[in-house]
Length: 196
Image (cartoon, rainbow, N blue to C red; front, side, top):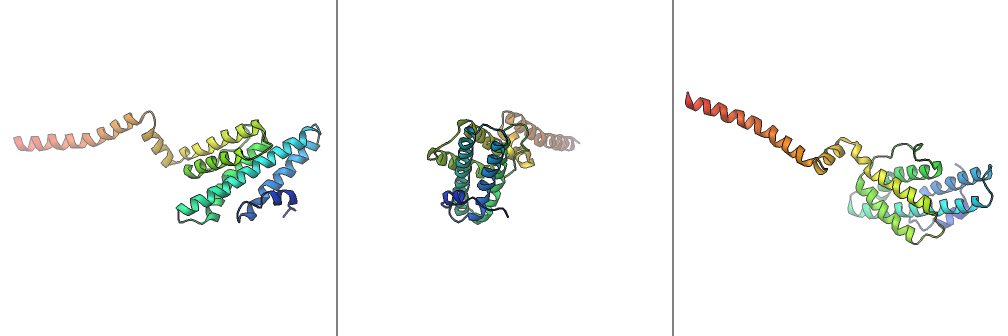
């Protein structure tokens, strides 16, 4: 395993007992620093690196808080919930470092309640995080919205979307028609039997 950045370890040590998840911010910071020194302007590299580290740290702290909150309300452990949230966090960090909207893979599918709670906690962390780049914050929030909507790709999500979407009345009418048709056939048959 690569060596960890001591500065990142100190700043992220407040993230409860999830020290095994700290390497997410360390390689990201080193990766960003390598690219900036390969031809980027020397003055903007430290600011971008600091901004990315601050944003990633806020995201990880929000994921830790979310895992704790969800674990208290469910029968899962914090570690299990954090591993699920880690899929989204890793995807978000990859999207931050790619910078392009089209090159990022599709978001992972986890419970939308998890992502909604992560977003609320992330906004709380952003309120107290210094040195943020507005573009990166907006990009991260857009990506969180994408992750929140990823559940719609599942069969359950498609069904729920259909029944709660704009065309829900059509779906209810179709279900009612499907139920009514056999009943009408049975009533016609009973009526014919009575006449005979």
